[in-house]
Amino acid sequence: MKGPTPRRRKKYVARCLRLKSYLRFPGDGRTEGRIPAAALLWALLMGAWLRRTAFAGIEARVCSRARRALEVSPSFGDDALGYFTERLDPAVTRRAVVTAGHQAKRHKAFDACRFIGLAGDGTSAGRSREKGCDLCRPYRNKKKEIRGYHPRLAMISVVGTGLTLPWDIEPYGPGDSEYNAARRLLRRTVGNTGRRFAD
Image 1 (cartoon, rainbow, N blue to C red):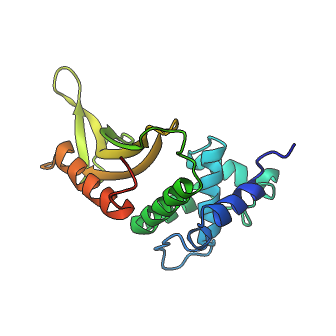
Image 2: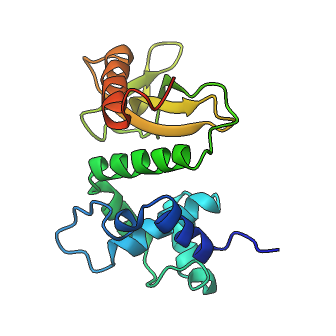
Image 3: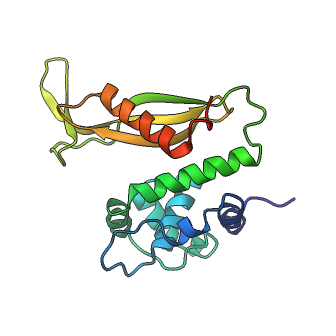
């Protein structure tokens, strides 16, 4: 019996999900990237597969003897991943997600489901003691004292398929609201996937 190796996963993503061009050109916005974008993106995907999503955990894998088995060519540090992800064009990743979703639907991955739905919700990502960007909002304790900052965002997922698939996010800063961000997100999602993708 054959198991899901990194090489087989890469072939599946490239051929069956038709994401070969995304794996090669993920929307890299670095001006002088010495490490190929394809290697950094694949390391991030392998980190998600191995449930090692922290950049330090991915660095430990690609700097170990496991690097060749993971199909990652050069070794690199967590700072390279941070620099890379900060400059990725989100529109390219959104198109890749839509392509993968349409391919999954075309290959009848959702046929056992009665309905395909889209569900939105608000969440936050990360925390810091200092305000890191314009999108950071304060979080407070019961005494209304500011304990730190975190970005808030609306997220949309595909539901009803037996597996919840995170689809897209929309951040919102001070002066904005989760409701407005969710409306923008829903409009963009329907525009990208088409009205007939979900029920």
